[in-house]
Image 1 (spheres, one colour):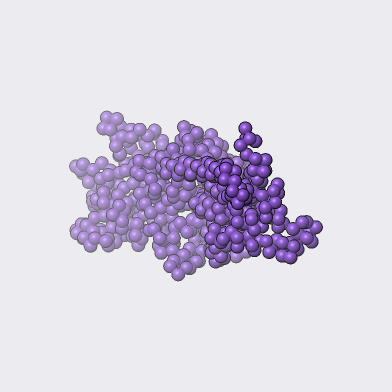
Image 2 (cartoon, each protein chain N blue to C red):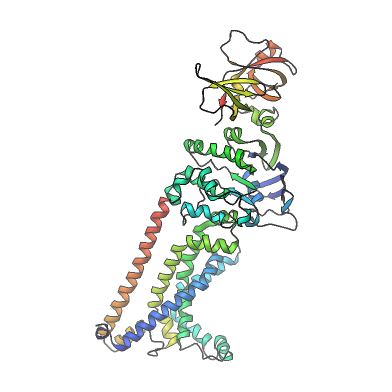
Length: 232
Length: 356
């Protein structure tokens, strides 16, 4: 049934998109949690620079981001030389390169909800925990993280959906290699180029429905959270 | 046992200059207007505020000095915040256990059931914080602090965000805390009624300085301090319920100076109580009053006579049985009766309030 609806190439591309989004979100959560915590709690003047940099991918054309990443990760860039010295293949034109690109591209979608959630936890709850003998890491894991739960849900879902729909960075950085770096959004482009509108339609409707469903999850989770907060 | 503070902190908009030693037992009230620095002092003691060049010692242990700063979670104290501070992601039971589980078993002196019964929160254990009333939340917060078996309990206006009914619900628990668990408490307040009821000592804070420090009795009645000049100024006496008289519907409280009659109360004979006598409810007579409707008459000797805020009034401090009693009478009466320090007289007390 599924196999008859999608072509084998479509399925592989969908799988790569899903895998890319999942890996990106997992790595972003690890990377952005400490970063967002720092942004939420620091009084340093560096904070505004951090905030601006974390938001840069929101406004930068994906082609610009992809172009610089290509230079950086390619065989003659710093990143490329580093991977070469480590005995690895260059990250450009590979799945690994897509992950790096998607992480940068979707980072604001994780940082901003997390930073907001950590700020909403506030200093008081952590002070209370300190007076109840909880050490700093203990306070972070038993008070800050659970109270910021909604930020994690929002950030994960938004970044997942945003990575699913990524096009420009992937095209610049990963090319269009079927089975390796060809994601669903690229396949849609190829279908349209080849005037295969029904092929484009099948994948487009899939992404449309998937992204809408993910956003429904975010907004209903936020609404429940807001109601609980209003009752408290 | 004691808490020794030496804090000197100046910011452009605020100065704090506190050097004092609080007794390591009983309830010490930090009393002052808002903005006088009460909360900042309490936060320094807790280590929540890291003020440079401050020194905090508790029972000879250094919590902060030039070289050391013991972080809050390593200080054996409990802290009750002004507003509800329960963790929203945990139910009452797990809120209570949060501190308990972080204290080594060997250092636990207060058990879960004991604290729960003490604060009367048995029925709330499965509730979430947002299902509780303000008073219930604050009772849970106090029980939670007790469960860390603190050696010092810090309370930052724990009743100020509550309505009158909730305050009345919590105050008896605070008094028992003091009597039964013998944990020293530093209690920040700007409500003189609360302080009269529970405090043993008062530190008067004004514009970031400890203006005066002393026992409750002394501080309430010292004419050079603002407390004696408040509209609701008065004196407080400790006593014991001596006898009930159902026929006249009276209970008798024995204090050092004699016996005071109050309206019959369902308090067992032998129970220790605290009574309050407002300065405006005391009148003075040079001879033992006869044929008077006033039941409570205490013999005493005048300590001093001072001007009051109202030029028509004078504040008279009288030693009754070793405790100061404050009377607010007219300047005219002072002149007519020739009341001066050393005068022996009789204080007629129109109304005595049992504080429970």
